Image (tube, rainbow, N blue to C red):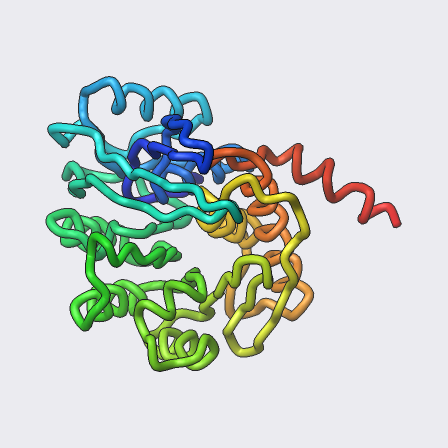
Length: 298
C-alpha cells in the first residue's frame, strides 16, 4: 500500500551568500513525498501548482522520484515560490509567494497519511485537507508542523489551527523553532507534552545540530550526525519522511526504547545526507544502507 502526502509544492529560489541565484523544485510536502519515494515507499501526493514552466518542473521532479499525483494538481494560476536566503552557517530564511488549495474527488485509501506544513493552516486549502482526512477515517496520520509565521502569523489563530490538526494525528513532528513560534512562553518539553495531550501517541522534536527527541510514554534522545552543512533546505521534511519510513509497519503504542532509537537514528541519518548537499535533495535508500554499513559491521 502507498503513503499519501498532503501539502504544498513550490519552487525554491535560492539566494546564496555569494549572490548567485538558483531554482530548485521543493515545498515541504513535495520534499517529504520525494524522500519517501526514494526510500522505497510507494507515494502519492495531494498538492497544487499551475500549468506553467515552474509547475512542469515540479511535475518532472516528482515523476522522476516515482511520486504520483493523488488528484489533478494543476489548480493554481501560478506555481508558488519560496525565496530562500542562505546564511553563512547554511541556515535559510524564506519569503513566500503562495496560494494553497487542492482538487476534490475520491482518494485511493493509503496505508498512512502524512500532512505537511501549510496544508492544514492556510485557507482555502485547510478545510479541503480536513475534508480529505474525514474521507480517510481510520488511516494513521502523521503531521509535520513546520510553522511559516511570515505567511500564517504566529498568534492564537495559528495555534488553534495547528492544535486542531494535532488532535486527529497519531504522530507529530516539529522543530524546537516551531514550538517557540506556537508557545513562546513554554520550554521545549512542556510545549511538546502540551501537544501530545491533544491525542497523538508521540511528538518528535528536532533540535538542529543537537539531535532529536521523542516525547511519548517515554522520552528518548538521539544526537545529530556531524556533517558539513551546505544548506538546511528540506532537512526537516526528509527527517519526517524517514521517520515514517522507519515506522511503516509499527504499532506506535507498542514501541520499546530500541525501536524508537532506531527510528530516530534512521531519520537523523537521512536528514544529515540532505543538509550535506544543496537544495532539497533527500537520500535514496541505498545511500543510507551504505553509510550505515561500517557501523553495523563493528
